[in-house]
Length: 579
Ligand code: AMP
Image 1: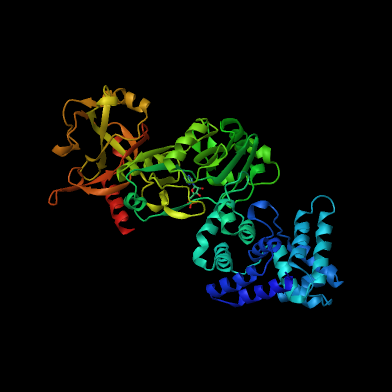
Image 2 (image 1 turned 180 degrees about the vertical axis):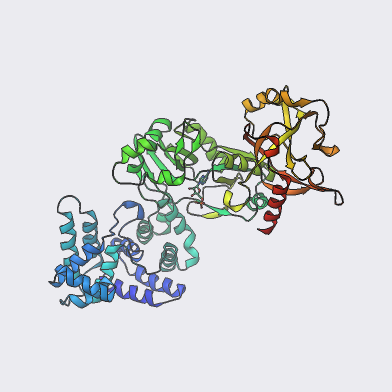
């Protein structure tokens, strides 16, 4: 195929505003391509010269483009820069300055060979080599072709064609209708190589496309999450009786391919980031027991000394070409794996999530460097909420809820209701903690026998000088915190309801405490309550309560009168209603 044919199609693609027309134009173009060319045509239309993961990105800068135009035009770079300032586009600059008329003879394959050579040039003298190769191409091309050669070289094609448009066009060209896209899309999602799908379809038909399978060291397009407006919608949307609620890490999505000792890491955008994470490469090699595996997960900067996650921005300092191992030493990365896509030579994409997860736990142990994502399995919204709050408390972003149904396959490249994220920024006000005073406790049962099962917490009503209850709290305590509770509260224990403590009979605890000990508490929201006495309205018989309270820490430095006041809680309640 002549490059001129492609260029006239590019021009028409740019001129149309109809997606259907785009598909028709592309279908005609693709139908005319030979098996050797069809892949290249797909890459070119997307502004690339190979599959996105292949690292053969051109992305040459303005300086190289200007030098190449100057060389082809026999002028100096300063005149090119002056023309670029005036015209704003190197394609137009080339059209004006390069006098050679060029010819129509250049083929798509020739352009691809030269561009690949430019992309691959490295080492001493490579900058000059890039300039002279590009200059040769420009001199041989016609003015309209020059514009697209420069755009391709800069990695800025901007035709407005997406990968799904090309898949529609392939379906229309070779399978009769764009309705036939799904098998092509599937092959694309697991191979991430549209050129390969096109070539296979052209040469072997649908049969060949269906035979494309997961391949080690070739990235699979990642499954994506959806979001909902309210946490209570999650279960219904996912639609399975129980779901998994996993920790949501705010790090970098990494797909790890292990092939014996050979490990390749891909980013969410499918670029090869192996060299950036030598530590994760080591952990995958060392701790993944299967000989071959593909894991999906997140690289995070976890501070093992403090037990907390470091911010995303800190991890992003690992994104670099130079001083990689030095910075890896300063900011070690931990890998949290949340899925298994391939193991022992076979794809797991069509196994259900519970099966994949069970296998994942089998092939990686729980080590501080690499471990399966922490999670719970639950069938109710309160379960999701509690786990979510526990995650926020640990400094995580939120949770990802996942279907456990029989058809909970790994949907490569898809954003469906199988995975739903719930993040802290969806629920304003939640991140505020309250400092509350412990005024009572109930006896512990079962695992908590011998200590308290929950404590009754109160806010301070400054105007009335009363401690008014806000919640009973049993969540958020570690085992050590729990067993320590009786000792901590012993000095405040009294045998009847203290005078300044206002409690409704329904909330009366087994044991009473004089207002003394202050705790920091995280909760979901403030609601009206017939039980709790905070801001008690005797007419409506309603107070305010904190839902889903969780213990954060003791605030020994605070006196009970320095606790959060009832007025502050009333203000929070009003603010919450405004958003
Ligand atoms: P967002 O980037 O906010 O659209 O959220 C989706 C991203 O969350 C994914 O692409 C992953 O990088 C990340 N993530 C963190 N933890 C998980 C998890 N347990 N399951 C799936 N994705 C996760």
